[in-house]
Image: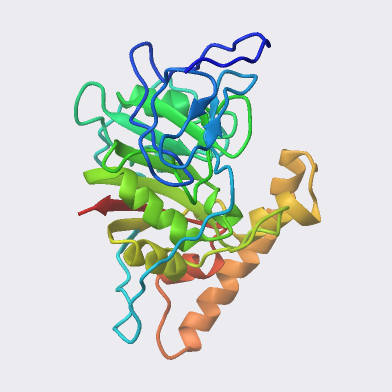
Length: 309
């Protein structure tokens, strides 16, 4: 099928020089070919055009209904292992790799190496693709999706990912889950497109200020519940003692745009007082709180590593 549109054709942006991952219609789930612009779904007739940046716009063309089955009345999921420090035995050598501000060396130390040549990684909510160097350094072929933006490989909605089941070996996401209107549905979508044994690695904001437009700021148990409900086995949670409610609210709300050295100097005595107060409370309380318990109560975000069983 050829288009009759006389406008200049935009070349498709490929995740590598060889092929696209298997695509499906985000409206009805039917397989999509790549023979024409627009790409017309044979199942429902939805037409997907190539955007100005070369990405295929695979966002749903019309509202759709989605249903989830949830279990009620059972025991809540158990808290998995929590890590506050860097991986003592990292798989990757990160020497010389420049990481973006949103990915700390501590978190990057938990990145796994690609299981095979040509393994695909999906960067969910990729933004400016700042995670791409780390993902490719780990040996994965990179695929980035976002609702909008020029750096995405595909324009897509996290609630209706346009990929076939069992496509990716890794899905990553950084500070995106709080922007999703239906995070439980998005977790199920990630589970669907991952291969068995594939990993879902990411972070979600907790004690960070509201940012337009965030919907859910997850506690660690909120993340555990969402991942467990989608069918993931949660390997571990992680959180950063250098990114707490103090840093998050000061940097993103109370004193936004303040020079970083001044902001650090402002927060330092507050954090010292916090540690002293907790120490006194632990001394006279019923049971001293552990380092992990204290951090989970004041974390700016929660990070996770989960596996599709």
